[in-house]
Length: 329
Image (tube, rainbow, N blue to C red; front, side, top):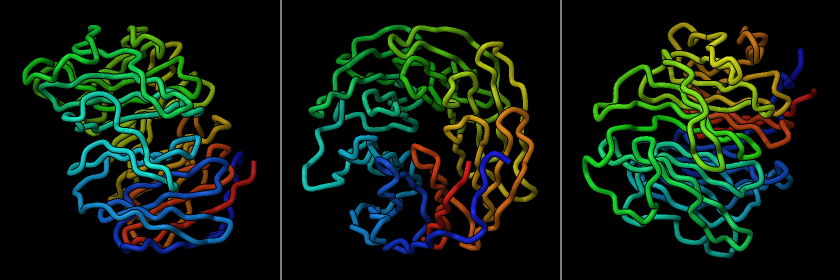
């Protein structure tokens, strides 16, 4: 086995709000962990097992919760408050990039160095795919923006019925050179999104890989070696070979459970999922065969996260608890 998690938790943390942990992300070097969702987020300092609480509003869905890889702020997007940046320290984060009036961001991703942010922005009738450079001083600079697959000025106002395409999910490679999206190319966002690869520097089309069997809630992750992408929703996981453009393997949700989170180990050989049956599963990254299952005992799982080096795994449960393991390669 390539990744061996300890059977016993290294730590078991309790969220301040004692609500489902729907957002989960490690900070730089795995020294901090942000966990929360509706009502607020705990920033845990793992060496001391102490936390700082960031209050927030109650919300139906959390679309994304990602620590800036440089530890400057927390990227959050949800159903009620939309896309925003939350302070992780004493310094206030900069304003969100682009339109302050259009905060509806259902999917976003960040490069491993924190220097590039890609997002699907706007609803089904005014959706755009945007890419932003993130400067060391915290300034955001527009790199490119697409509407219906065509370049558009990022400063162009958002107009209803302007767009027919909707980007369901987005993932950017660690180095920012490659982008993979799940796209519904009609004003009525339906099932079976088209999986598309694009150039990270320009957004230009590389290849239309094919239709996914996942639905509107499709999410994506790219393996660290950049050769494969994983598309998933609550019912299945698909592996797409980015060279051949083929879906090479699938993994169905376990029994009456469902997938609620997915992470690809940085070694690129293991995919880790969280499920509604309360189990974390480790699958081979090529054929998606399950090689290990761990029952967490913290209720239904709503989120999973890996530290950047893959040394720590965290899973968030329905009762506000977070289980953390060490891994051995």
